[in-house]
Figure 1: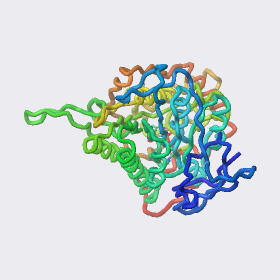
Figure 2: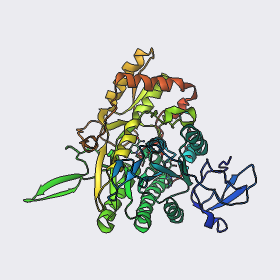
Figure 3: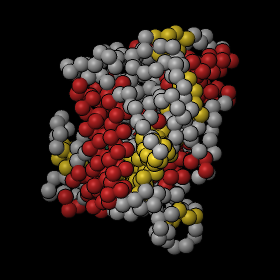
Figure 4: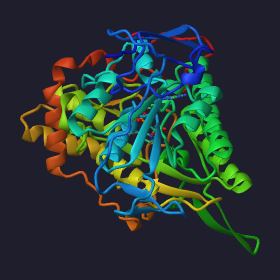
Length: 482
Ligand SMILES: NC(=O)c1ccc[n+]([C@@H]2O[C@H](COP(=O)([O-])OP(=O)(O)OC[C@H]3O[C@@H](n4cnc5c(N)ncnc54)[C@H](O)[C@@H]3O)[C@@H](O)[C@H]2O)c1
């Protein structure tokens, strides 16, 4: 069996192997004895794949397996149908498919009969190594995950390891896989990470903005009809003192009216990168006729989906630390180890939230009902809104039912944000397309807490408190020490 010896940043295929470029796939029988890929970025100068049995070929080949009878097929307009007609199966490229939302989505789409490829640089795993963090759940290598998925379901997910900021890599990936839809999760997605120091701020904006720009160019160049489903965030809107609409607002000014992009007020270098992405996508829809859906996602909680539950090796990551942990997930882990719940400041910060099972549903709905050519469509992707104090109260009650001693403390807010404010964001478009939300019920909280309790032996309590201050960010590179 092949395995990845080194993780990767940007990969360039060395000229000797270039003509044989194929996706890495764990199910292949044609792995080379030793396969060397050159990478352009230090410290990852070489990537080696080893195979126990000698092989003559340098080709790493992906096999396509027959999928379920309900396999989604593509009509000439690109829309989804569940049909038995012999028509081409929809091919979906999931960029960032080794991450929290991407992994769950890739498995869900594969299970639903889409032909799926994961594109990922694995840099999220590197962030953990650099910052001394770890997922609450043990997570297998991407290769073991995909092997396990194939052995359980017979379905292959193709794998392309590389950095989408490397256009040569992305071009080859597009030409090799020929996606009908691209779901783009592949960004640095932590606001605190982007506020650690200058180098992380610069990295976040380069990685996210240039990566997305490359995806837009790849679509224009190689797959004009391909539908881009891009993960944005509700954080792009900030907290205005009026209702938040889904992407656009009709304004009457000096007697004239127009429907305009809803104003964005991002509050970290990460959130700003998402705003720049949205602007670039909107522009290319207009200029080049790209079809795109921007999913302004709320805060995601939970870890289990139908597919990740099938086997321990398919487990998703679960971040609880002060850099990558999201609010509700963090509180569950804090309650499980009886660490006081850390409310930042006054705790009136209100945001939209959704269950990870709804993330995968929303993405599927967006793919199945694609944007028209030239359309820049925006959906607000969340199901309920809560303040931080409301979440703390819910977790306290659920914890007490399980016999846990749950306290809450207010810690100085490391962020610059309103701590008490009006918040009412619209979120009807995905419901209209058929989203059936999993709302945060008592039983769901019980199961989330029980899940955190199961893994509490893995919790490093030193990672819980916030360690990154929006006001204290400086130019000097920082090493975070717990
Ligand atoms: N998790 C949330 O609560 C949440 C909320 C709102 C929006 N989002 C958005 O959803 C997307 C996914 O979030 P997540 O929580 O799954 O993040 P994650 O960090 O777990 O996953 C992102 C994946 O993208 C990969 N990646 C990053 N840069 C890349 C590059 N240049 N080339 C190739 N791969 C790259 C990483 O290795 C990682 O596997 C992000 O765009 C994020 O902004 C997430």
